[in-house]
Image (cartoon, rainbow, N blue to C red; front, side, top):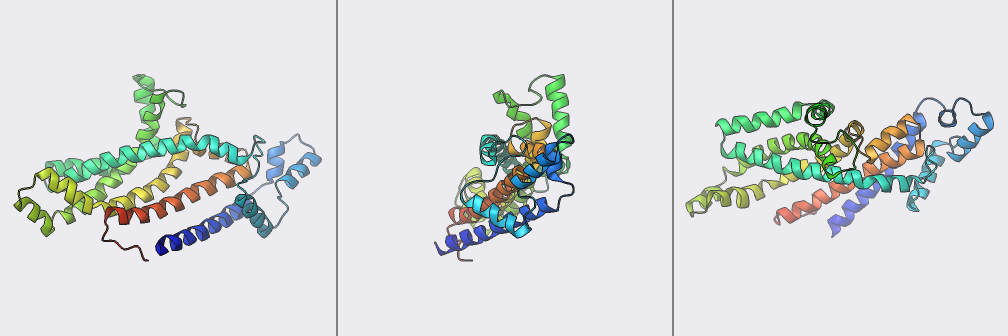
Length: 306
C-alpha cells in the first residue's frame, strides 16, 4: 500500500509537470492565435474578444494556475474551433482511440509472443531465423507507408475493407493491423531474449526430467517467468501507440482524438490542443503505474517497495 501511495504521489507530480509543459509550449508557438481563429476578415474587436476569452494576454504562471484550477473541476476549456467544451469533444472521441489501441495491443502482443516463443524454442534453427526476420521487418517498416500499402492493396484493389471511417466493424482491421505490426515486432524480440534466458534455468530442465509435457514447460512455467520484461515493453508500447494513433487515425480517417489533435493544430485551437496533449500524457502516466502493479501480480516474489 505504501508503494501505491508513493507511486500515486509521483504520478500526480508528473501530471502537474506535464500540464506546465503543455501550457508553456502553446505559449511559445509563433503567430497570433486570436487572429488565426478569427480569420483574416475579422475586425480588431473580434480578435480582442477571442484573445480575452483564451486569456492569451495572461502571463505563463497565470495561465498555468488557471489551467490547473479548471482541471480540478474537470474543465479543460472551450474549443475555439467548435465552441463546444473540450472535455465533451475528447470524451466523444476517446472511445474510438481506446478501442483502436486496445485491439492493436492485444493482437500485437499475441502475435509477438507467438513469434518470440517460437524463435526461442527453435533457437538457431530455421524457425528462429524466420521468426526473427519477421520481427525485424515489422519494426523497420514505417507505419504511414504500411498504412498506405494496406489501403492500396486490401481496400482499393481487393475491396475487402473500407478505406477509412468507422461506420462498419471491419473498418478497424486496417488501422489496428498497422499499429499492431510494430508492437508485434518489439514483443517478439523481447520475448525471444527473455525466453532464451529462462529456458536455460535449472527448473526448466527439472520440469522436463519430471516428464511434464513440452507445452506445459514452455507456456505455463517458462513464459510466465519471462513475462516481466514483456509486460514492461507492452506498457511502454501502449504510450507509444497513443502517439502513433495520431498518424494512423489521420490516414484512415478514424474519428479518435489523434485525428482531432491534427484538426486542432491546423485550426490553432489552443484549448483543444492543450486538452488532448494533457490526456495523452495522463494516459501514459497511468499505464506506467498499472505496469508496476502488474509486476507483483505476475511474480509474487517481487516486493513493491521502491
